[in-house]
Length: 290
Image (tube, rainbow, N blue to C red; front, side):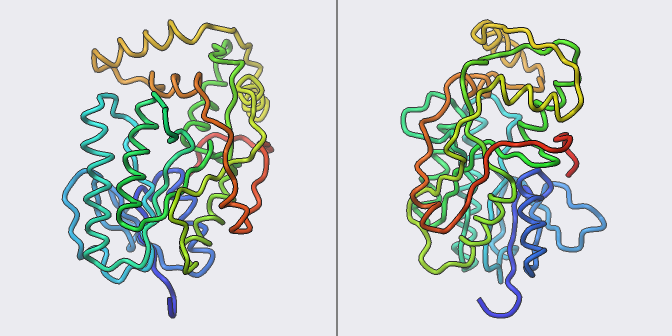
């Protein structure tokens, strides 16, 4: 790259996308937000809908495409594949036509061979598409930070309740600080010899689910009481609700993933890149602020 590099970021208005965009801006990049509803005060925002037609012209002159967009509201497998998987394929094909320097795809640690979680399987399919097009795949753990969004932000909101159901409290989660994700993206967007297999990013020490939830409550100053509840009945209640098209704040598939944690992360590539990953810790209210 010469001069000021340019990155296009899908899902730039979401938690991960906005975090990555802020980091790139701070390091001298010009960033273009590919979002469904561009903000009037953002001159570097372009309309983009995952699953819709992608005009390669919007990606011309881009040094790095960072694909963070994923529609988590979908629960039917066909819809998930049409929007998230096929949508990624259309985007990366357009990037090839436009001559984008490199494409980075944000996957998930939930994507591992043998997973029965629909989300994990969709992410695996997305990874296959990316790697077939020489894209770089990043598998982050549960991303957290001072003002986390995503799943951590949603869980934090639940801590406002006086009674909180403790589901799958004996399982564990692998986590990743948002700044460590941003550092990895910055490095992978600029190196010449990109990894050809997924880069796993998660602290190797898992966090017990009950410990994680209690730390979220403490960070909010919440006095919530936790009530252990078997996850299986709740899973089926969520599934039934989804079959009737009821919109819920938490998906059955997410609960399945919580109850079936992934294998320990292989950090070989992260270490080779010189990345240092910090453990789970909260020092401020993690409610969404981006």
